Length: 318
Ligand SMILES: NC(=O)c1ccc[n+]([C@@H]2O[C@H](COP(=O)([O-])OP(=O)(O)OC[C@H]3O[C@@H](n4cnc5c(N)ncnc54)[C@H](OP(=O)(O)O)[C@@H]3O)[C@@H](O)[C@H]2O)c1
Image (cartoon, rainbow, N blue to C red; front, side, top):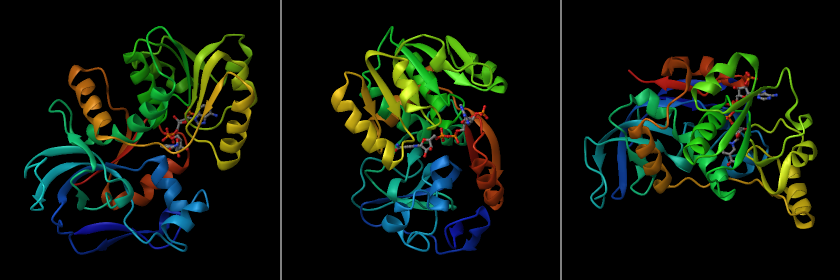
């Protein structure tokens, strides 16, 4: 099968299309024929080994599992003997998690992998635009006990996490303020944002307003200033905090009532099924910026590296 392998950490050009052996599912595994995947900011960071700890965990010069990619949208082609939760022909979407391997024609994942049946009302490409942003955003919004009437500000609202966070928080009945650049103002309104702040025109930390939740999805707001915009018992959610901010935030949290939340997210099958229901109701929509064939993965990574994608960059298989 065709697969993209990373020859060493660094530039997009270190990704190479190779012919590799097609995986065969073990007893407790599912073999998925991939129809679509995505190149997320997480894939790009993995490729760059950013942060450095990636080298210590996944392999020093290059990842021990050289086929990157975690988002999966495809059809089950084979199952191991002990698999009873899926059948051949099921259309699924979700994440291969720490197995990676999604930037290939096939991937084999454990039967308990974070997957759900793909809703019938969306394409594989649209399905591939959901898991990365939705699982991460839901993880953080849940910690903030997201609920009706809360004032929620989402910073980096036009990215993969942001576009999902706006829709998910809206779904809970929160009042959403989305922060983005001029080009994305209309997109934010179309996703349900009640208020939009154009960060090229206005600094949200200076408008005197207080929010119950400030969710910085991309790590570009100032922690000190963002805290000032929080209500007394508010949550500051930091999806993209480095080790220093995580430690600093935890220490600061001890002395104040406001809560600072960071860390690594946990993906769950339950969440994937929740997203499936929302998609079927029309309450959660894919936001796709560009779609590339697998052969153009280098271009896809280079585009993601620029840090200005709207929602998601999709890889479509033929
Ligand atoms: N904690 C975890 O376990 C976990 C899990 C998943 C992801 N993450 C992290 O979450 C982060 C966000 O990921 P993502 O995929 O959502 O990012 P992304 O899609 O690459 O974000 C791109 C968006 O950010 C916006 N942006 C860029 N600079 C901005 C600025 N100064 N102010 C406001 N918006 C700005 C861009 O809009 P403009 O073009 O308009 O500027 C663009 O739409 C990544 O660092 C990822 O590693 C963490």
